Image: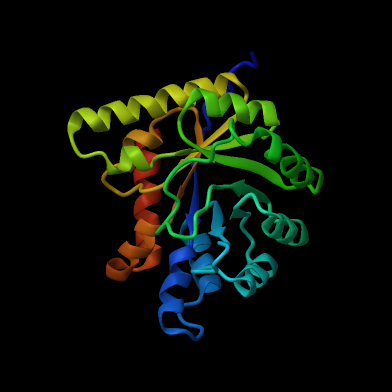
Length: 250
């Protein structure tokens, strides 16, 4: 086994701006602008911008990706389904990172982790082509050792742990159990030499126990920040999340 990496001194924050585009698309037109959101996120302390170009283009569009790729100074993390169409788009734009996620047209948002273990054969050539293009590949997976092992076998450098079950847990026992599951997966992933990210459903109220996990290098947060921005503005929402993450890590 590879030795576990050192605890990251700075827990990175990737801001997902998908739902800025969701609001725009509700009425059509150009406002609010995802590019402006990305620029505001950078000024507020974000370390990267995450976008999910879905098959049905329900929020981020191809035109958004074109604009962001040419204008945003921060690294772009492109969430994508494991399809030929999305592979071609990723290879054309060559974002800093591509996170392969499960995708179903009927779902409101990503509802579970990618079954990397079950899709090992079909994922191998896609991961290889992305890696050969200089794109940093990650997999969005459940905090499960079987999926971590599959990620290591695929040779991806990064996995993002799905925090949805933790974020949606209600009782103290359920919350503690899901947090322990995340902690165990973080330890197991680090022992495999993987860089650990996490995200989905994180808020001001629940981010602390996740941010405190020493193996994590990055959190990706979007929906809550865009929703909170309705009340306090995007700059203030991101700065508050950044402060909570820093406090938990300290």
